Length: 179
Image (tube, helix red, strand yellow):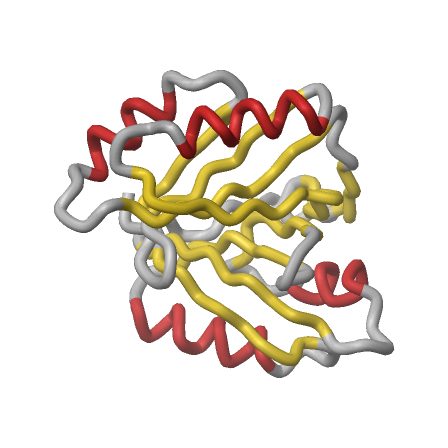
């Protein structure tokens, strides 16, 4: 980023309803085929294969909660999907003009913040970390999800250590994006 461009903190509230849908797939199923099928469904804006408790993570956009429920039903009916968990995206917090982090190792990290701290304060602190690309405040068990990129596993580990030092973060769950 050129030195004369300042990074401006921005807040985007979704128009309609946006959600993060995490999916477990059937053992032995073909993730590439499932991804291809899900990308054909209405409302799906992106999907990634991840490591961890879930196998796939998608972002969906809909006009209404009813429409979103219909889109999620279509995902659940997709061959190879065993179960889903959905988190409504409440807002996206990002820095305008922030330089993109490396893309060698992309990761999704979910956070639980402690009482007494506003999630927006924690999200803003996360954005100060160079590897962090996007931060969403979400509903459900976790309060925040961040997407980041690092050059290697050692950098990822250093970044996670830095994130865990932020006041207000009580727990992290990390998913490395495979595809």
